[in-house]
Length: 302
Image (cartoon, rainbow, N blue to C red; front, top):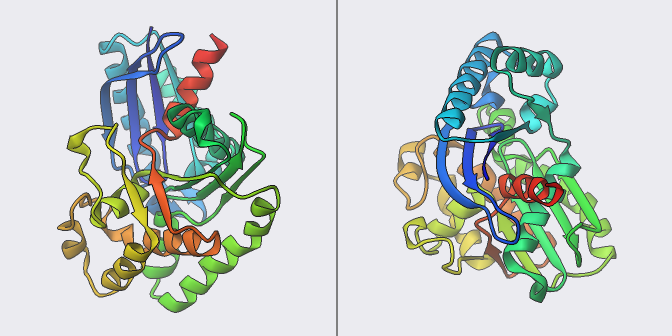
């Protein structure tokens, strides 16, 4: 069965088309994405008119692409930028009316739960108790557990795009940002660790993948089955380097796209704080994340 999952994130809109069947992993068949930057199109906590137009146009094109690719079903969801916008319900209704999609807002704890499911299926039961960390454009998801459903799942407003907009672009002190990020994560770390430590600590998301690549992990061209990890010692050095680099210089680093270069420093601060406060010397990078989790849960229901 060919299926599509449409992910409207705070930074990027991404349609992933897969061939799915019971008893096997979803196999990617086609990908269509665009840097919508919805987090930057918020005015007084509402998605701006320009942001709405861009979103509707992208979803219309994504729906056409899904039809052209032969998708029998498209699951569409939006994360923190639309979830927290004061006009989020209006935006969702406008998209659905214009496209015929059933775009839904995904709650933060569901985002963490479904990402955890994808990681569990990728690494399997031999990983034992998992700790999963995902830095998105608008939020940081943290989940831990020994089963397919996490014991604890949190979503914190610490996305790389959000922090870049609210702190760095606003000219606020970077050291104060570091303190803020660490205080937010520390406030939840106790609740996560209270239920047990991790046998396997894992990172997902484009931000973590980019940080790992800059720190020496294999490029994506080598395929998803190459083991990739991010060492905390390397990340600490990278944070100091990123402080002094402009966007053009960051975009020249391996694995960093031009549209995400501006927010890599904020993402690195969140990653550094996460690894430090949870006592993690390294994180293994998982190629599956939220989109795959949504697909896997739907396949299970079918």
